[in-house]
Image (cartoon, rainbow, N blue to C red; front, side, top):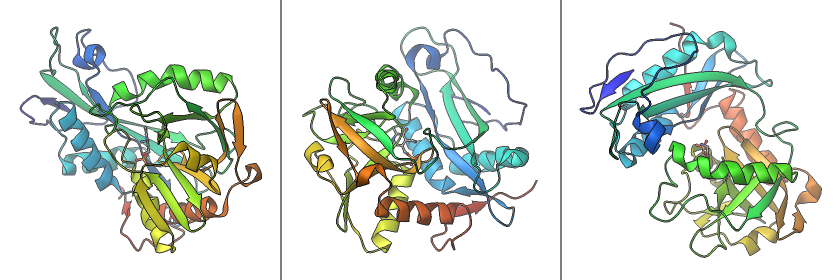
Length: 319
Ligand code: PMP
């Protein structure tokens, strides 16, 4: 769908996947004026297609638009567009246990502007792709992380809490280097003191010690993950104490268990964390009991195996 700066969205339409044409002076190409979302659709055992908390994605997308001086996509337009795109691609939603359909909504400043400023017009588009596990070795395969001390993902007052395109470009170099060294991904620390955990390139971080789970608080520099929010609720329901606060690196290195959460990664156990050349292994490199339990709870709801008592699941009707 197209929109001008006054925020009047035109009705969109569905097209086969292909290139889009934008001006060389589009604000998104020159000034990074763009945000995106990541969502998934699942095929339930009853062969229905469902999505997970799309209202939360709509909300985060609208908030991100505000931060990037873009006209927000109204919640009903966002959710309706997501459902229509999924529905048009329902045959591509993989069977339960095989994978899911990843949905990528984008809002970009496509209007031409030479001087620094917001674009005069915007494009809201959604594309989809079937996906399996994000990291190598399957969804529950523990990942090996390295702590990054030289580069930061986000600064206080920056755009770390927004899913804007510019948050991901600084990560590419760091992630590539880590992968070359054999790591799955990188743990970023806070830019102020370089000692508190922020997050991983595309997921939030949790530490477990006994029946207490801690995760970095939302202080504007990390993405408010929808999986994070859901896992906090599920863990509390299961009797865990969940603390949202600063989480020091020392705490990670002495944790019983760590895991990461995100739409793409789901709940992934951390097998090891390497800091200044020293590798700390968790749970003998296997998945921990808490991570396994939370994975089962979350995917059970998402894939329709467990009752959706929280109203997190939205059915995607056939057209
Ligand atoms: N942090 C970052 C930087 C991310 O890109 C993502 C993925 N959207 C997450 C955390 C996890 O967020 P969510 O659970 O909403 O996918």
